[in-house]
Length: 243
Image (cartoon, rainbow, N blue to C red; front, side):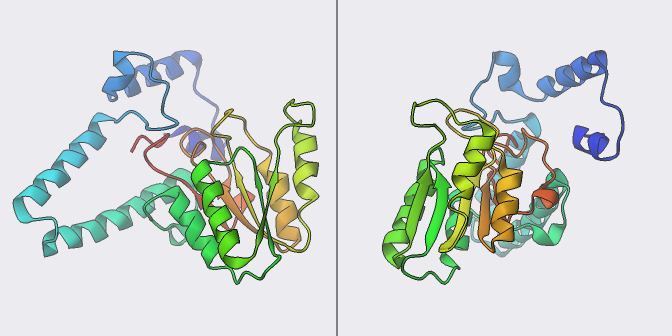
């Protein structure tokens, strides 16, 4: 039984011995994890043997029948539906809430473009957001006349803000004319777990839309996504979900 299910069902965690045995079993399925200490899952997670086999199978099918054949196109639709089901299981949420796109940034941009922006509207984000996201928000602002308010995760002395101080610094901007809050669950720079629950709640109570970037959290951090309830929770599969 996956750890998520154990936690959600109130089942006691594994013992130290059981946990060690589980880790050994998992490592046998991930060659890169046995070749050394792999520390870059935040960019590209190591591939399990099963993922590699699935990739090879698809490549062989495309080689044999052509990438644009009807069979391949039908197979893609089936696999996308299967993938939505897998994601729903990982997040313990409903299938109808899941959508598949090309990247985390694309999801952020697609949602942001759907807002009817007016000149002077504000987008609030943090200075440790991923560059592609920050760049996309800047381009959106230049195109629509909206303003991006970037809150520093450090105080004036250069020290990391406490969770309480960070919440208050962001919350100060969660008023009109702010219409969108974009934050990460985990900072891609420092690895810090951000206090997103109270920020999402404050934004929601103010009628502000929210995007939660889960690029560094999904697959690594156990969250109650339905409880957090962002308008969008965007995440990739190649990092902590191991492809």
